[in-house]
Amino acid sequence: MASPHQQRRILLLFAAVLLLLIACEAASTLSSTVVDPSESLPEQAPPTEVAPTATPQTDRYTNTSGNFMGSPSAPVLLTEFGDFHCPYCREFYEEHFDDLVRDYIEPGLVYFSYRSAGYFLDGAGLVAEAAYCAQDQEAFWPYHDMIFEQIVYRDGYLERDDLLDFADQLDLDSTRFGNCLISGANSARVELDGIH
Image (tube, rainbow, N blue to C red; front, side):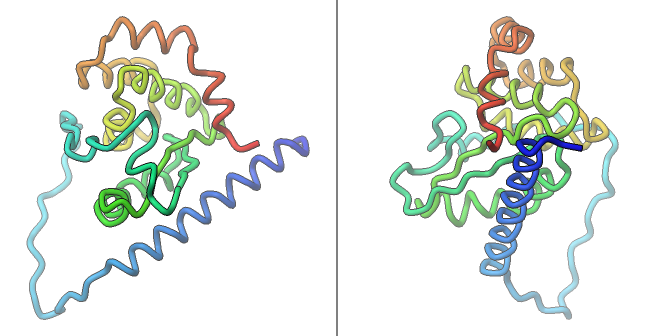
């Protein structure tokens, strides 16, 4: 049985994810458009099995600082307590994150931050540490996006070699990044990010 501290942590994580999903659903409902059912939808290409080379959306990163995005003077601070290995977090990224950025962060309505929920799923702590190693080179958000865009091609799980490869794809200083990741320089930060 989990200790009271662990039970509280799990309950708070569940509550945070639930609130995030409710907020996303509300945002989706507010921004949805009516589609005429008589109009035919364009055909979609069949999914590919090969992971595309990531091309970060650099325009979205113009108003960022570390793991924050948007204007610090926005009337709302929204913090996502996420886990890069969590399928629901990936679903939020795939289905709602671009809308959140376009409709709320870019207009200055929301100041958004990402915090790692910690070590809830195997390997999640290492992935979060890697994101902070990328942040040390001012690349948190491109690295964040790459993780969520590429993890689906790796059976929902990332290993150290994947994380190092992502740094190379983003043209980060690979030696500096590798030293940061291998040394565990950000492990305490990931632990502090978790819900206490």
